[in-house]
Image 1 (cartoon, helix red, strand yellow):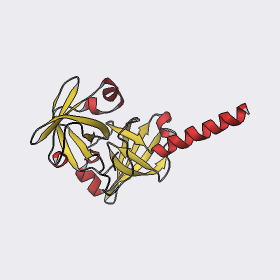
Image 2 (spheres, rainbow, N blue to C red; image 1 turned 30 degrees about the horizontal axis):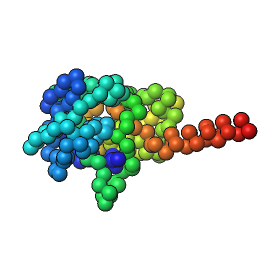
Image 3 (cartoon, one colour; image 1 turned 180 degrees about the vertical axis):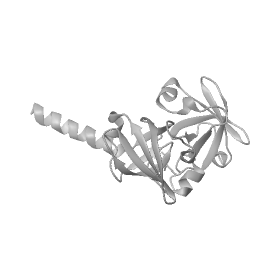
Image 4 (cartoon, one colour; image 1 turned 135 degrees about the vertical axis):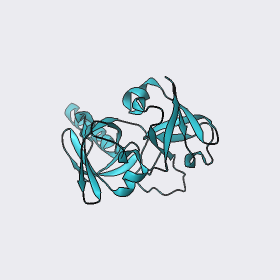
Length: 199
């Protein structure tokens, strides 16, 4: 479990078809083999580490469902350690289970913020609501507006400075994790409707 508050901007320093090696500092404090670190929002397990790097195995499902497959050597990645039981939750509860990707459709400066519009598959968009939580590349954010296959986010200067969202350009993709609450509500309502229909 994570909070969606990025601790550090790391960088990919090596990759194979089965693993990523990432340069980092902050998230390595106290890290042990088997610990979870969110990399661009995807919960991955540390399998090896050194003074300024760690390695995670990446399975085909993760490559296909996330933007990690597009991360070349040198690419920045958002990093967050899993929540400590006695820690603060500054964003919202993020599982690190990516639902899919969204494409940057437009970036519109508005004063000191940037209004970012994203295009997303309707099966993901159905869980995105105005003023609701969403995690993009592992960053906890609030939705401004949402439609059938799009949504907008206001990116403040701090978010643009300390996360990958500050370097994303139109056409690039971000990892999306919707608020889990919407999925549970949908499943509960569907079960109730099915139960009523069979009664």
